[in-house]
Image (cartoon, rainbow, N blue to C red; front, side, top):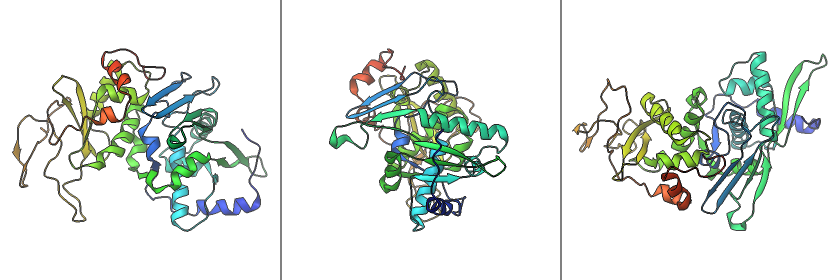
Length: 351
């Protein structure tokens, strides 16, 4: 834990962050949604993530004392990103140095505010500070790696009586600049914070990034998603979790469907659920993802698939639109994908 404290001028500036509205939609960086930067398990992980996709390389390392930062710890970064963006949009001067009361962060991310929650927050800050990331992402043109921790340092403040009074933290320049770049910012549904599974949270990030690109949704092979997640779970277990998420339809704002291609490989298809009910007069899509193998009248000029209300298991069928499965090749190293298809382990952190 750092002993550095911000100056009085810095404190006056940081107070502006706490005056911002707390009910604005949280934001996140697209790069953090698309690539494996965090452990998806609540158990202590020290096995590095070693991920390579075309010209992008990511290496995430943890120390034995704290373990790797988890996808739940990343909620702190979502809070930090929201504060930076809201301050910028309000015309305020932003900074990598931020101050907050623990209750603000915990409430924003849908956590409790008791002593146990506060201790968990401090443990998350320790993991974010001790986990190191080396990546060529956003450095591709220079062909060099950038190494950083998710939090450069953090300080627990106390009042005159020694009671915890707040937290100061400094986010890394890599993260700060990515947030300030509008091309790297997406809003996320607050229902995201209620997702309890690591794979479930990670999948929401992937779906959020890709599903808005085209009206017919997006598709990924199960094997490709497994490699992209850097999960330590065996593929069979990972695939079981995907099917369960599809069965429960738990991702806020999106509809999921399982398909099979001509080679028999499982695909996860997903699209936004509100394409046909947009209240702002935007284009109404005549197709919706569902789960039957027959066409039914949709009330539009074309047809759609309709989901049986009594279904209790994942549905496997073809959805409307092109499969766009080329995304699996364009977003991964082909040799890694082929090796994964044969059922072999890929590399540390992705097996």
